[in-house]
Length: 257
Image 1 (cartoon, helix red, strand yellow):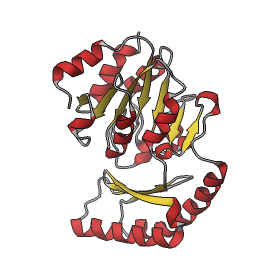
Image 2: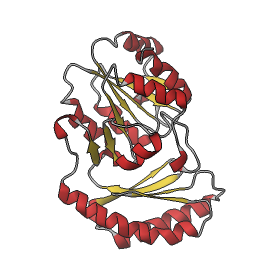
Image 3: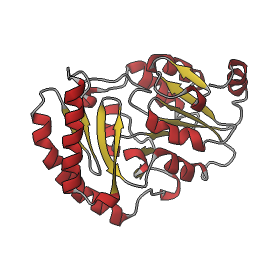
Image 4: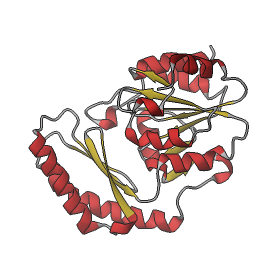
């Protein structure tokens, strides 16, 4: 982490137009055993709705767009979803993936999900998240031995290898989950494209997981990198908050009354 005085200086230098880039799970809301119940707190929702009237706000999430809209209950926000593969309501109709790639991944994600259903059913409590362009298996809140976790990962990889075009996909382990996602896309690449539409803005990005480091690496020096929780190594962020509640409290300073 940058020395404390440097972090304070960065906060004081947040003048001029600001651009807020915000991850969702673990950043704006606490993790839930069932990802479909990771709703925003009333306070967080109020802050975000006010914030967007004062500054441009873009959600940058691993969730697919429609799933994020459903769980967040935020209407009309620009979103980068599926780790940089999807984009809606972005400047000038900016797209992240070609329509051909979207068709390929939509077809194969469906086949992969079908193949993974028996694996999820074999362990009560596992949650298989079906997405338009990817599939994620969550095991939050499930009592598993290290051996069982390793076995689940092996079976996931085996099913993955037999159902998708391998060169077009990649596997990404995360916080008590494993995800199959389109290859060649990440949050950082998508944000780099987005930043060109906001010249002169100071970007502020907040995230909580290792997948968010790709964004922190592409922010300009004047940008502010914020980590929520303790998964992101200190060298990649300027400020850290222990929980989403703490971050929302700080974010409220920019939302007005």
